[in-house]
Image (cartoon, rainbow, N blue to C red):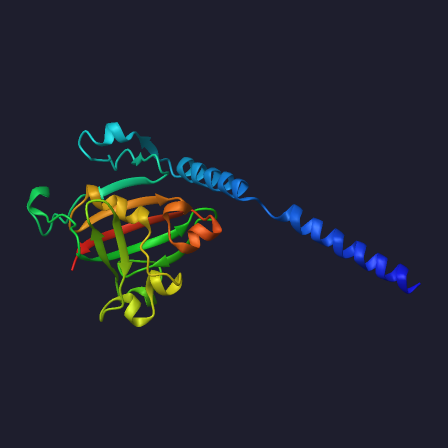
Length: 220
């Protein structure tokens, strides 16, 4: 009787393991879900995708047409403002982002799968208690590699236990953010759709795509 009970329990446990395996998605399946989520987000928000070749003719995306340029690594970018036109008379007058700049970022992050706001910094974001401090990161561009690291300096979010580095437990700036810096200058406003592989560490580990409305990238 005891052997029979043990056998029944074993079968139940084995069945539970197979059920759990059946409910676990493979990485390939998670990537398929991500692509579908991004495609749905683009469709639902009436986004028009333009090619890199078309974009690089003038490095402008038409906001009235809701244009985003689609890159081969899965990044989609809309440039709302290429520079701060209240500070500079023209694009040429605005400083470019360069190696060792401390760059402030003010943004809203949205988890694309369910359209939920998951993070925000201090410019008109939907959560007033986060309106205090900008995120800031040190930018490295040695001509071969672009890298960004959030820093905990006085006046910045990480210093006060806020911001991307604190929430996601990693000081590494999403490489999707850094890619946009090539095309914009001080005070720019961009919108990005960032797939997991070029997102922050949580995005990569969970295969989560995010939308960012980065309302200002500015040199400190």
